[in-house]
Amino acid sequence: MKKRLRFAGYLAAMFIAMGATAQNNGGIDAQMLKELTESYKPTAAEEALRNILLGNNVNSMALNQENQNEMDTYFSNSVDSKGISDQESSGRCWLFTGMNVMRAKMIAEHNLGAFEFSQVYSFFFDQLEKANLFLQGVIDTRKKPFDDRTVDWLFRNPLSDGGTFTGVADIITKYGLVPKGVMKETYTSNSTSAFNSLLKRKLREFGLRLRQASENGAKDKELQAMKKDQLKVVYRMLATVYGVPPTEFTWAPKDANGKYREEPQTYTPQSFYQKYIGWDLQNNYVMLMNDPTRPYWKSYEIEYDRHAYDGHNWLYVNLPLDEIKAMAIASIKDSTMMYFSCDVGKYLDSKRGLLDLNNYDYETLLGVEFGMDKRERILTYDSGSSHAMTLKAVDLDSNGNPVKWQVENSWGASSGHHGTIIMTDEWFNEYMFRLVVDKKYVPAKVLDVLKEKPTRLPAWDPMFAPEE
Image 1 (cartoon, rainbow, N blue to C red):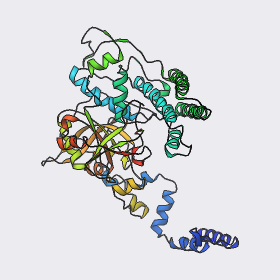
Image 2 (cartoon, helix red, strand yellow):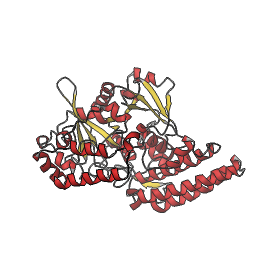
Image 3 (cartoon, helix red, strand yellow):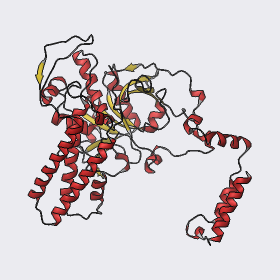
């Protein structure tokens, strides 16, 4: 205690010696520092707690032991799944989640055993398309000043390994699918950060050269030729670390017992997609959002938030939670998984795989109250969608109301609860943001909203960072 007061006195003297008058312009002067220091008068218990916290993780100290009883893992309605995927150290949760929705349906319809699509195949073309999206965006905005908000956003975000379901639909519709065994994961696809930084650096360089060429009088035809040469470099870089995507392959499906169900056949990625999926990914699904910062029962489109230049912008309907839950329950009851995204880092007990507002008691530990609601957390950048998973189960009470939910994650089978995460309905209310639902589970009144012209929002809006 004496050391702390002596140090505060030293700081006060230092401020005075320097003639500090910061309080008049909003700074902390000696007098304010003195008042702040003197306002902290810990009890003996608080002193003991501080000593413990100085050497321990806040989450481990805030863990609510009363919430550590055995988890209730029963679900009244659940979609069967075979095998947990693992995105490892990459930001491809959006791609794994979209593919997990499709593979669950494919496994059920064709009576297959454990099966995965090649994530790296689709990711290769996602990165190539995003590179083109950036370079063409630079060409389209070349007449605008460098500090224009759109130009600035482009160069800040030339490419990422994150994304949304819209990207899943566009990439797979355009390039098809292949089984995982046909194009396997690589070291870099499982750990994208280092290469991603290098690719972004090269794209920024290419973007700068396009703007310089335009300033020197290059016409659109010349810029398009430059872009094509730049994309050849990008393709080579991608092929070097991810491999060359196959254009044709031979494959035969296996049943749950590992026996071939038919003779091997030769496919292209597109013919394989048409035979085993065949659904209209772009038009058969509706993205729903719960964003209390904006009016409900309206549709919104995010400018430049797409994976391909000739693809689709992110489009969604903003709805109250009860409406979204009703569609989710209908889908699960019909054995159909859904693309789901949320703020997964909030109140996550990763060891048990439980998202529960009662997991941690930060308020008692720190002696403060956290009073913001969902709307206020979004407005202040405190919360937003950060991770996509596959919604697969719900537990309903006797009145048909949800008690808890379960998602299939893409962090490997050893993570969470056997590769899944269970979330309470209370947590779902606070930190769920997006759900993609098959149109057949969407009421007409929701589909009617999509007939109206959507409100266009800028790509830099805080709610629309890609899921990773």
